[in-house]
Image 1 (cartoon, one colour):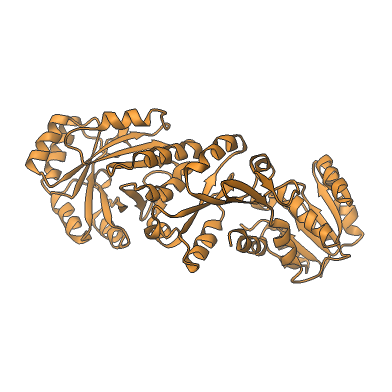
Image 2 (image 1 turned 45 degrees about the vertical axis):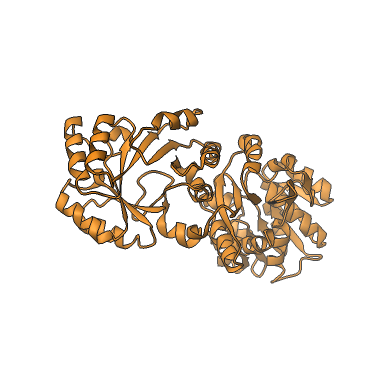
Length: 463
């Protein structure tokens, strides 16, 4: 049940949020966010929504804004029960005697018993779940903070194992965001989305859930594809791939997972528990994932695509092909002088493809040892980055920044030595116009955007 969280705080704002949540199955009115507990106004919201309505009134220690004493809280809760919402979400420490009384007075109001942990995701989720159970609850919610993506996967695994029709499981925090999308595969009873602003970190906008992730179409047979890297928040890969899946009428969803190198062993031990079919791999993992694949098809020292076939992980690298295809729309690189900045995963792929296409390649890197190692394998020249001015003065045809410097708005190329009419490319796709490309454009260079490379490789990944 896709549920939009309504926070108000005034009646006008709450109505606007409800109107903008037309794609939701239900609304949760966060009563503690409203400017007052006014039964007349709340009744108007119930009638205005024409949807399933959930009430919740959370204390500060449970992540809410209600600050009144306990006696006043129970008084307000009793008054609110009289409005007979479809569901009332109550914290696990709410008096069982009170819940029993409300259930007798309002038997049609379904009770959600909730547990929130804003610090971490405990290891004893099953024990917590069993302790939540009481004779009057209809659903049980466990919301825990995911300090990393592994925590989020543990919550998903717990949900997958239960699937008893009564569990709502939510990994809170940015690292848990992807699991909110995937939870529908495992019959999570309620998925919460925000309308105007997030109530907690990791919540996804309801329009993004429905329009980008095609949430309504997700089911138990949905295949999972994911971007792995850190950080991945700025990537638009989920927009592209989910749009492609929709065009192809493919029952699949693409999500982004923040993952660091030290988490890879645990992550890959989890993947067979879920319906993962493929991964895009971005910085800083392109070299680190090599040891986890069963077959590295390209063997260039970096992988940007992994597909699962017959329970085996097959690694590819499409970055080089994608980058050189984008450049060769403007100029063929054969026998052309190509300057490449960087010696990491993306640079390795581009360097291999450039040599394959018979370019005269020169590699630059701050760590000159890495540049020399890569150049020795490809039998081309290499220098430390501080020598780039001297080489640029000699002339060149193409210059490629294959580092992440553009994301930090850093330019590693001295603008005064950029040559008008030459090709300048930056592999960074966001921002679209990096500082390097702006300088290159000002100098009259022909620009190749990282977005062109991104689209080229994305189209080839999961066809």
